[in-house]
Length: 591
Image: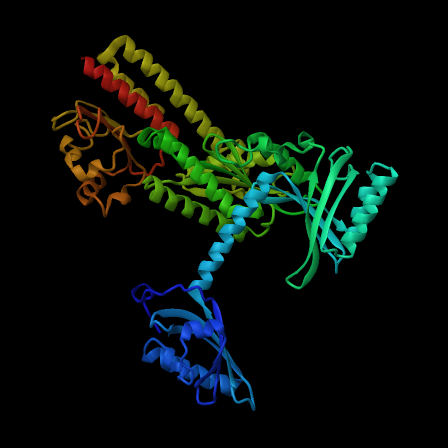
């Protein structure tokens, strides 16, 4: 059955779940309070008449027949409430032999259940964040298994401080305790009241068992008994009354958080990683280290302003925190670069799914809240212990994978594979660095040459840039000229005519600085067919196109072209060629 939920306007009511009992002939014989509220006070009505249309009514009637034949059955369908509003529901039924009310029906309102689950999830994340702000230590003692765990929240993630049997926990307290009669009695009372599951525990002791150096602290234990989920447990708070928070690891303090985003700072990232790779509780598990960088962040700042850039960083930090949750820790490495160290993800497919959702959610939020249509991430990932057993080695590999992601065109993640990426130390990265150095030197040369000789040096400078940047051509058009005023490369009169740039819709491709970066020609096929055809005819697959001083009011056009090959322009290439183009414009303007 295909039904358009949006057209129906499926309703959400306060009722999540209710029960109904039916007679043999499917008449309603009994319902609970929520059932009465949903159905109305109409006993003896036929249950299948709740269906929103004939198809749904037939489905419900067939469902009831299956309940009788098989003893139980289940269906998801639409029914009407007392106000004739449609609800998507999950119905289960059992047949009670020899009972007058022989059909026991349970109904879940799916839309309402989903809404409540999202509310509970949102509240849970909020409360975890509040727990992280409190600086308290929490504990859960499970009476039936005799296990106790003490933990502290950093951001929204719980960091385990102790996990063992209750007996070992109390032994540790006593081993590090201040040994006087009053304190020993208090510790014995704490042990007795927790073990017996007293309803309220409020006891202060002196012990150094939770201090990293065993320093004696005044600890207030407050706990309550409950049987959550059928498990008998004591849950509570351990408050340090000594006021020596500075003795905690830095990453567990408020000072260890990045002030702008609330995630870990760089120093905290390093300390937390060292803890994970050396702690008995975590060092035997697999962990993924990810470095995340916003693509073309400089252009976001240039086009939208630094305030929007700051908001973009906040969006990324919030998405990372929301998506990672307690499956790892998030930090800000610096600028627009972020860090993840996973804790509970050991399957690579789970990691890939997480990374895809992060990229998708960031793109959606940036478009909706900041009107940034293209907001992408490049991510490099290393794996503990496969790629290294310490922070420095893992970071170096993640950083190189991030570089590869950028070089391959950005908007992607690269997980380190020795068989694919082991050459990055002496291979492609070195080559790229060498190319970058040569390009920087070329820019320095032409800057000096142009300032010394002015327009006389333009042709020679263009030739130097073509060679150093491995371009196929550079063209310069004055306003309203049919052919290029200066050209270096295959087409002496220029790759295209000046009126090529007169398509107003094509101007939408240029940013506020009058720059359009074309990485892949086929992207224009469906949006600017005439321009695609012209560039395709000349075999121009990639280009950087600059209008000075702007596309709306151009004095001249400057284009750098790649022929017969796709090229993913790096940030450095775009910045350097834009600098060269602007310098040429200033020189020609004076001439």
